[in-house]
Image 1: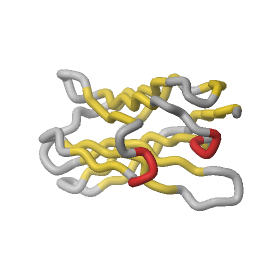
Image 2 (image 1 turned 90 degrees about the horizontal axis):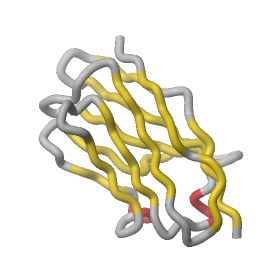
Image 3 (image 1 turned 180 degrees about the horizontal axis):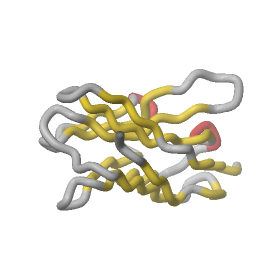
Length: 117
């Protein structure tokens, strides 16, 4: 079982920046991934950005060039730096840890990001 604790988020004006962080009780390694998903009201939960234990990243087209996902040296944290924020980035952002090696799919509790125009 992997526990995930998220921090960051809040209210920001369009064009501003915010940083989300997620701390996991397990380190990222191999093909496992950590990352961020978001869910706006009335919509499905969608991928934002992920990173693997070998630092391969994947981004949704809507955030490419604006958001950056990264980990720390211990690979037990994942950060999401969100720049040039837009009102359509407003959503609850969820941290996710996927263990493809041992089997497991873990989610954080979610953190609200609201971007005002």
